[in-house]
Amino acid sequence: QKEVEQDPGPLSVPEGAIVSLNCTYSNSAFQYFMWYRQYSRKGPELLMYTYSSGNKEDGRFTAQVDKSSKYISLFIRDSQPSDSATYLCALHNAGNNRKLIWGLGTSLAVNP
Amino acid sequence: NAGVTQTPKFQVLKTGQSMTLQCAQDMNHNSMYWYRQDPGMGLRLIYYSASEGTTDKGEVPNGYNVSRLNKREFSLRLESAAPSQTSVYFCASSHGGVAGELFFGEGSRLTVL
Picture 1 (cartoon, helix red, strand yellow):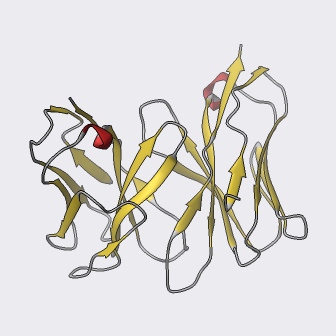
Picture 2: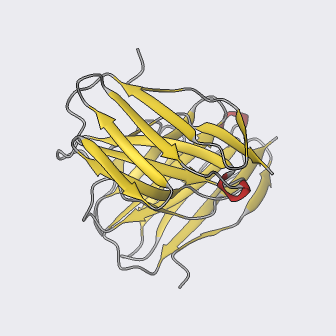
């Protein structure tokens, strides 16, 4: 079983839709839950992160962590064509090994 | 503010040739990383350098070598390129404040024929 599972999509939605992107994980030791956005032919950029459990909101984006279910989500409200990108989850166990565990990414297309 | 700069952006090699990918960051970060990204495999860590003067293997180090030249620069060398090393390579850096907060370059697309 992979440490992180993420549906690669592609996901296609109309402009203005609410988008839900998800990852599941198996290691309960993860403490940092990151969401990166990667535009085509660019490097990933950190969108937002959550430490431990709970929700975090930043504008149209909300990150949610459910540690009991080992499930993390990224919600995008009022989606825009500029949100079209691949979204990668990344999990981190803040020990001596600073290794990030990456999901494969979900490709999102927001159609005008 | 340049952030993380990678050169070259594109390269085509023949099997057996060698090359070095260069990476420089201007954010005074301690840690630097080299990843490769392949369809269906995601991002995989090749090598990382937690601080100037140290380097450590990641998940897929075979066929690669690295040099942390100074705090700013971290290079990745392919001594004898193989078609399996055709990939997009990303350099990243972090200041270590928030674990997992990486700043990536724009990538170097390498094709080995």
